[in-house]
Image 1 (spheres, rainbow, N blue to C red):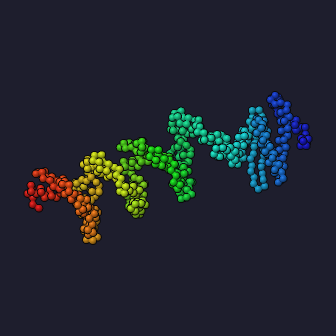
Image 2 (cartoon, rainbow, N blue to C red):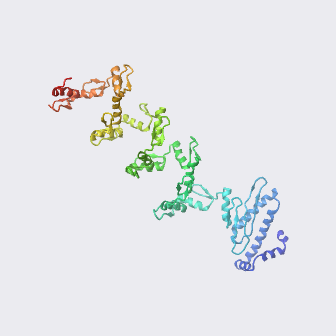
Length: 506
């Protein structure tokens, strides 16, 4: 009250003069007599606050300033935004200064008030919006989710977040019916239908639907990998890739196939796996018509047509279509065989070879010939076997024209022409074209006879000799003379017999 007495009557008169006559009439019409008295009282309080802030700050006065600031902020929230007068407040301490200013325009008819943040320069026409903005700088998160405890700066963000718990998706695409919890997500989704890609890489020209995707893409050019595994130190360009990678350490496989029970680290791997059950092959080669379950496999396949082999061994110069093939090939040079059989200890340079090897122990032969019923432990062996029925011999010797059903048979045959005998007995020095022949030969030194007749117990060093011997017990004579019809159990006996008809003398 003492402060009011100190103010002259002229100050009140000057204030009224500044307002236009229309403004006074309108103000009196809109406000009751009590409100006019309260307005004058509030004006006095505001002048007191302004004067208080102009006094030199002492330690004892800082608390008073803070209280005045809180009271002023409270009053601004209570009153109509169109009737607030200028406020400027600076909050200063001795050691550290934090400065937030509210700057307002003069009270004129049709002119809005405004609040300016001194840190970011942003301007707001409502004090409550300004207060919300300040939380960006103060890190205050006033709105808390009562279900998961997550906190938010804006109340609207909390409302959107709650849809995760409620499952509400109020924004629906009119074209495909897909629903979204946020309007912005629907707008981005619509670009799939329109084909709009507004975010373009300035380096390579690739365009993206979302700005976030462009930011991630730019890391390809910059080499930035901001997400690092704390366990092994491996870095990633995307947070999602780090999350997937962490499951390698935890062993977590959260995505499970409902048909076969197989689990996967990533959902997209499960989606690809499901195509093995559905038979879906959505990626088709335009040149040969072959279908593939994955786009990357189609890209690799296209290199067969283009002849591109971009992955080259630095040691021998051999090139490969896929980087995975190069990695496996490098184990030939390093001698690395990281895949071990737990039953016999044999090691392999590929996990696929180990899987095939395990069928020797399990007796599994999953690939069966539909013509004769014979089964095989490898699909490659079945393909080769089918050539017996089709008569196909795709591998031809360029020197003599002889053809073979298997490539390895042609390689062995070529040694006949070159005279190469790379497999040598260490005991007698005899050399052989094939390793299998050397193994059989070694039994002459070791006297080993691993093939035993189950009927009479007689043993043989070669499996072929056992097969011939078994015909004694079965009476089978598969070799028949075409001239006299006589049959023989061994092919060599037929050859000798044929000389009786031809008159040939050995």
